[in-house]
Image 1 (spheres, rainbow, N blue to C red):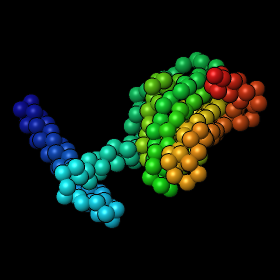
Image 2 (tube, one colour):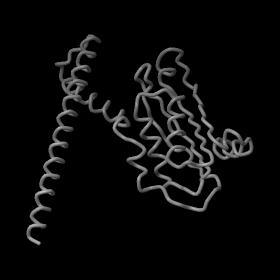
Image 3 (cartoon, rainbow, N blue to C red):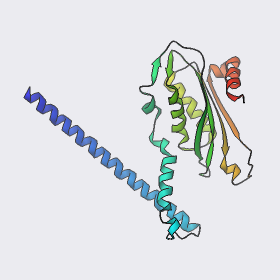
Image 4 (cartoon, rainbow, N blue to C red):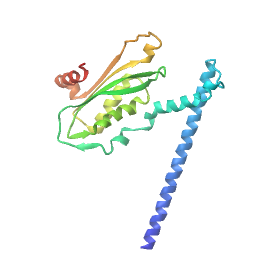
Length: 217
């Protein structure tokens, strides 16, 4: 008995030591990345003709670096991480819609924001997912450098892979600051993208029902 307990304690101690080392290694890597981004922002400010030593800008490179890490935190997250315990067997085959999911992302062409709403529907195939997880999937992929067309497809594909439903539909309506603040400077322009998979692609009736329920004002 004592030998078994001792062996368990040794194994547990080694496990804890390994976990601690992995955590410390990750923290060191994150700190190094943060410093690189901070230095890059300092270079940008200098290139713009600013004085990075003046009071208002002393901590701006660090703040900007932390903000950029948050805005792109989706690179560190996967759908598997959030869906592990949130998929349930359920005898339900009718359409499930979650609409008006707010999203914020960064255009990969100019690194300026685009923002709007995502509307998601799926046709369950004996499996359903916790509704908040659909919003989490949107968050994962929107918190990366993106183009709206790819973002829409990634969300739809992730849901299709995780749930294997009869169909998935995703529509995103967004305003791009690269069109509002620069370039053509069109204040009221918005972009709508859609991806239809499975029955939503093949069945006109299902597609029309989704669009009618989602896009009506």
